[in-house]
Image (cartoon, rainbow, N blue to C red; front, side, top):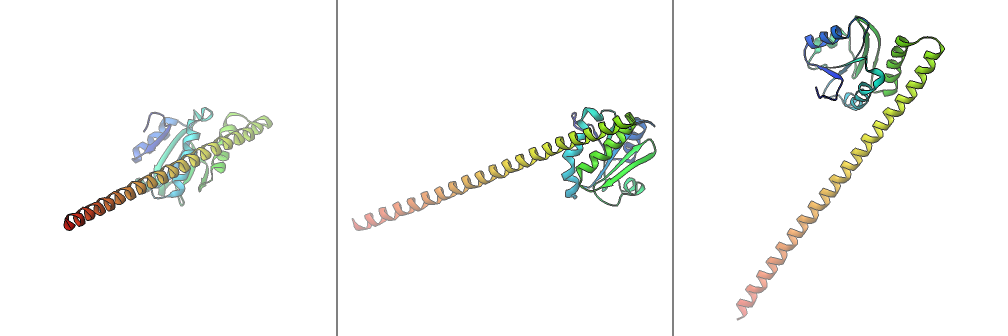
Length: 191
């Protein structure tokens, strides 16, 4: 696990159980069920990372379970689609959602996070404000990723064009060399 990540990657059932022991009965645990082949899982990774880094959720434990590595855990948790997000408090599953829907994930987390902290009208105002701010942050992450991908594509196109120009220059140099040799041979023949 990289030092900057707050997402615990569970590779064994023991690691998965340890996440819940460490969080305790009152701690919130958000579990992300993914698979390496799932494009939806991959598309949600930046959003999960952003949420995990958010100071607002510093008391929430974030865990990631690869269904291919831990099929038993996924089966026990009744995971049917990818990615699936389950929010737990102790041994009680509070909420669950499936699919690549960042706004829904934020709303789910906010609902239970704010409910844990506050209740009443101000709690709902905080919930709505927090959801809106988090959605804007997630959209910024998405824009940044899209800009990076566009720059990567542009760099690849430039590199490809440079390689093509180099190849064409080499071919032209070879043609010129052959032509020069042909002329020299012709001149030698004429002498």
